[in-house]
Length: 146
Image (cartoon, rainbow, N blue to C red; front, top):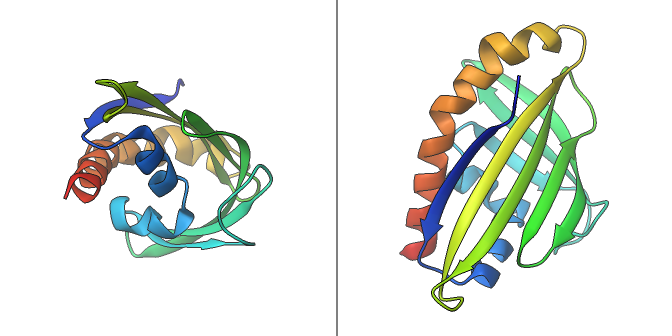
């Protein structure tokens, strides 16, 4: 299966958007399934920074450890899961609009399934993400514009 991608325009400068979306402490503010996101070191994040994220799936809470594998402020970032049965692979891109006063944000998410996760990715994880992602981007837009 291929990555799920969504794009949204936000009335904030790329630098502001990048700073917000790459600060893991903000993740639960704009992603419904994220319960906690705890940096495993100092902020701001850098290539190699790890973040322990706990997500809610129904009544269960699932921990995941992700690592920033690329950062190109304020243009792009890449996170990859390093443990667990379902490992996310997230690419984010920010394009400046209107001479840098606005931003176009594109998030592209895929998953690697390991063990039981191989079956969960296509049957549970991706369908759930398809529903959550548009709401998350709208929340992100609202938080950054107000």
